[in-house]
Amino acid sequence: TWCYVDASTCKTNSEEYIYKSEYFSPSNDIFYSYTTCNSTDRFWQQQLGSSATNVSVIGGINIAAAVPASPDPMLYKQLLDGTKLDGTDVYFDDTVPFGGIYIDYINELVKISNGDIQNVTSTHISKGSLKRYPASSFTAAVQDVENGVVDMA
Image 1: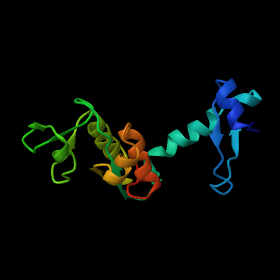
Image 2: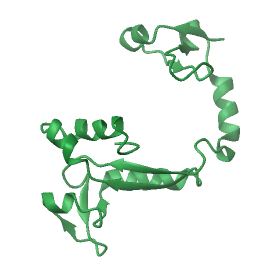
Image 3: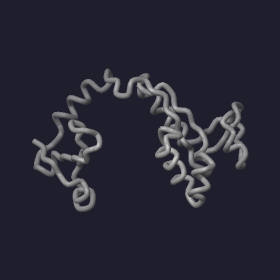
């Protein structure tokens, strides 16, 4: 059993799980919860678990990801021989690949997607977004997502 809930109230005042309904248009902010209504989503999770390995959710897409400036070991530029590079000029050079814990994590997600995600191409943040948000490369990366320059940050 589930019930509709006010997401703002639940996020602030409750430790219960809430879910956005996918039944209605994606533009509607309609949320529901099992635990708020003294129930569990155990049955649904078991159904998902039994079929999860055979489900294609996003159909083998390629994703462009903006990479915010971050210190080693999270993110860095590296040559194919593993040599780490530093500096602003190399950050904007898409011929030199990114490396680091963040990139390793994304590559693992691609592997476990069983082809649902074909590839994630990491790229720099646009200079326009960096100019608009000079204090936060993370905010600049999100701005690039909003502007449609990349798919994720």
